[in-house]
Image (cartoon, rainbow over all chains, first blue to last red; front, side):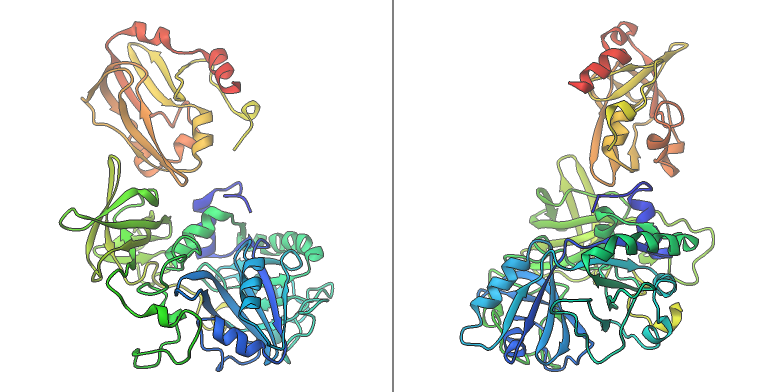
Length: 392
Length: 132
């Protein structure tokens, strides 16, 4: 996946917000976990409550170590009570497979690292379903009902060749695919898993089918700016070898309804108890599109000019702007027609003290400083969760 | 990023080792970024320029160019007083990518010492430098 294709990051980012973009995500790794104890192992190692997950549904969460630090985030797909797929980040297939094995003493199960055996591409943007409809044999059946974070279909061979009891999803030439209503942009769209032999022609066919909709191939730059605007973390940058707590993604932890504890025991749970050295991760939004470099070279100054932390991510969401104090996006309804949206910097900071939303910070890198505000969310009016009917 | 052989190098300007160009016309020097510089930077999203009337010495940092990838300071090849800045770059910073020797110019200076231009490289010397 390159940084960007011919038209550049801004155009790719906006294409996803306005219409559709595709991402070559075959670098991501998949692990099959099967057998009688597959559920028990995953429910212990994964931070989400898997007992309420039904076949054909998937869920986002993390794998922690015993110190409560994040090894990697992942999406777990349930095919059946004894068959699960775990999709992790690039290069992490072996690591997570070994981690699961280390927790599986005397368990009846199969763990297969499918790295390199499953190809993947994402299509994201409001025209994703319309474009995919032109590529599938049975679009009416597939898109009849497909809630957010559900999946259908299977691969043509290997451990994932038996789907759930739901409909098959095949391309026009009969190639079966696993289609998941999920993604990393915050916008309506899908992730497609399929045999590596079929990905190149699917990529090309998608660009052709999507041409009337202005579909664009999107690289790593747009992938990063879109996910940041969608307030999603990047593993090993926003989540990583530190306590997986006090961050914007606490929905990944199995808190009880009253938020007082966890609904299950899981690896790392006890280490998440608050202590005095805790850090806090917050989303922030700037005033203009100007960014700073994330990392040690940049200081995070609070209102008293004290350096309280570091910048984990800083990107520009080209599709957002500020109307007074309010963040708006190109998809926000009811905006004045002459309003120009030119992008705003955004990202995540890790600081040593809790901050209220609306707190002002200065991110200072050498001679450059940008003023930012702690936020609870970044790009508004995202389309990922909206009912599929809106997009067919 | 492109190969050097695919980049464009104007014959009519002189170049600096920091990839700026300078062109003298009727006692005014126009300054910009070379095609190599804009290609390396990637899509430019913001250009920070000085004010008209600002006075600089050769080698001073006079502004910065921010792309999706990075921020790059820009340095003056000659000393002088800023007489004009390219206002079009405020709304269309991508002009630096699209038309770096013409529409994407950065500032115009009234130079103090025209002999400073002799220290700059012509196209051939700049190309040699790029090819290493």
